[in-house]
Image (cartoon, rainbow, N blue to C red; front, side, top):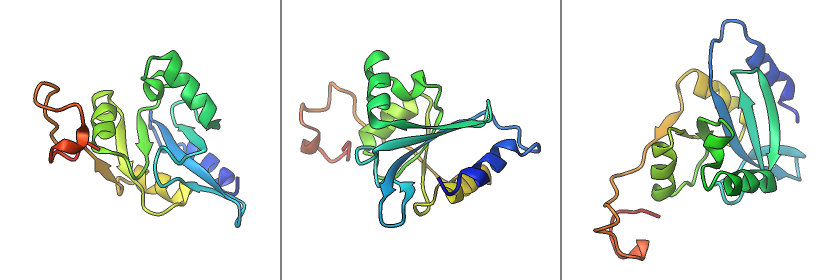
Amino acid sequence: MQTEKSIQELLNDASMNLSRKVCLPLIHHKEIDEFILAGNLNSASYYYVVDFRNKQNLILTQTEIQKAFKESKGSGFSALGIDTLICDGISNMALKILNEAGIEVYKPSGGNILHNLELMLSKKLNSQKAMSIPSSQTCSTSCSTCSTACT
């Protein structure tokens, strides 16, 4: 990965006392032979995890993430210790679930991994929060039947 050295420098920055574990969903852009941010969680083939607590990073496959979700009964990101997600294209219902699990979700600025990490560290990425969603008693069985924009 081309940005590996720079991300490692971010991790080793002595002035940084950050205890976040950040996940960035990725796709491999074959034409430039580089990983870039996926347009949404569902289109990701890989998940880049940057652990500022332990100063480590790793790439997980979609299969590994799915296994974590299955083994943890749906709380895969939390089960992996991930508390921050930089991803676009997340539905309102997914945002609600992630926010309730204590996971901060940020809207990326472009597809470059390092650039988005730097923006997050400098508090220049916009946080994504779920809009108010009615309780299950007032919601029908089909999310597309009301105007809450759950999906």
